[in-house]
View (cartoon, rainbow, N blue to C red):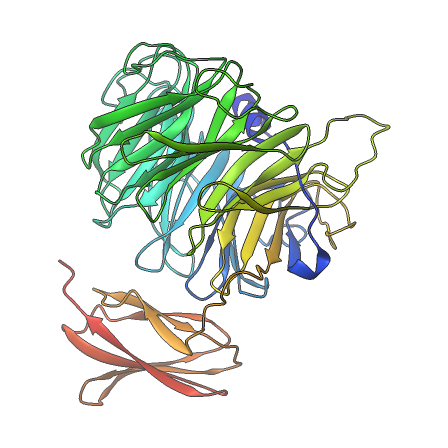
Length: 531
């Protein structure tokens, strides 16, 4: 097996640990997923059919629950499950090198966009040559996980992809870090060691524009979102002083560095936030009211812009900013010796679920792993940051939660990586590191009513995905025009997402009928122009 030092040091940098114990009646189900070696989960998204797509990288071959052999070292690995946690499909993508999947996003056509970092040359599943050391690798999939296109983007040195979002115009915004000079796809020189590199793609993956921001040292972009005004909010970690594009001094070892950009990527404002030690931003979200929630971890005391002290070691540090970047509130949240925040979601009632993992204070052969040590950790807070409850869930091994998502049935899905054996909340284990998924209910949240049938997207220019809201064994899917003439029909079996191609039909209204052994339903779909 090949060894790629930079990739494994990257894994080590990203994989610090932690947890908190949940009441057993709150756990609806949990699943361990993987091959016989190591599989690392980094992202997950809810799908329109009430299921979930898990995304990460795998070192496992065709063993355990993994059905594809590895192409090289680390490969992209996707696992699509239904609402009960049962497998629907899985896919691997990779070249002969290391391919490190970081993010997956649901697209408005019902498919998925993947982004990660790759040093694989052209060959096997990789269709373009490497530009340098490590590049950004983007793959577009349809609703069934079939590849539609892929792109390799980079300069002559190192790129690290962290985030991707679909934009309002149907394209994509990529948030990455780069040390490349003006080479390959990179249009400007590096400002320092690592810079923020932001790339806007059109819907086919071609570059519309790009921007580089940085100081003289290291600036690692961690999160990007399109804002309500069509611009972008960008956040990451910086240890650069006032230099290059950075107009604020650094406060400690490293700080939160937040940029607000307009729709063309031009800088509108920036903010540096930190205390006297190390403060690492992991994620940011725009809230329903248009403000911004920043989340990460901090070991700084009360100093500089840090106004809430840690209780012990490293704690979650959450800040709310208004639309202009001015602080509304900040809070720290404590679980154990070292708490690492990785994910934040906003509920419909404006409460927040803040999630990550808590690391043990004691490491060594004599350590006894107890509840609230090396576990998934999460806390629910009010709109103003006031704590409602906090919990942990885990095993006697080590759990690293990477993403929490809100499910359509009113609960949450906790997703990450575990090396724990069967114990406490964990009922199965496969390899040395597995994807570990825990489905929770939230008693305070209203369960969304399921529709028997719905279509997404609607209107559509070509494909729509019919979502069936119940379990069945077999049936048929038929398409009728408004006059009732049947235009196509095909058999279906157990699938909850049914892609239907309307591309060859003229503009107009069509009825898609689903007839199963359980019931018969129809949904109207508007077919529009591709332009």
